[in-house]
Image (cartoon, rainbow, N blue to C red; front, side):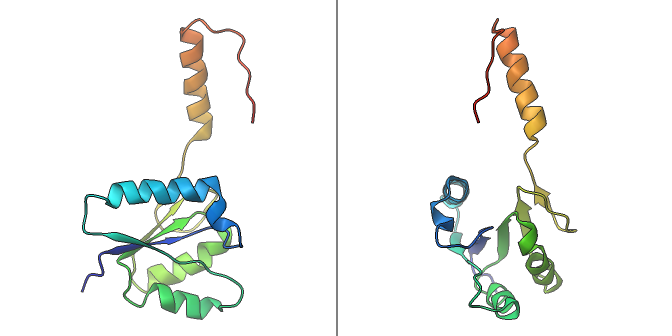
Length: 130
């Protein structure tokens, strides 16, 4: 039976996790994609008051059809356990070493393309502020 819900597991579930620009963009992007579907989004934040087994049980109890992990190595054992229980998942960003699918941006290639574009437009003095 389908739940018609996709779960999001944020990387750092501290008290300010939901204020992070990265998480806000992730959630906004997911909501935009789900807007024209039957699917809803559910957020699952793991914190120290809940042990790992209970958290994994809550992720795999049928409330969601798949999980999106906001890539963090600390979440990798949870993602592996969820996958072993048959729930599809994907990790976004960061350095994730597990066997499951990962979506990552190639920052080096992106910067290289941006610089080549600026150079083709005639710009020669380019600064990076970050």
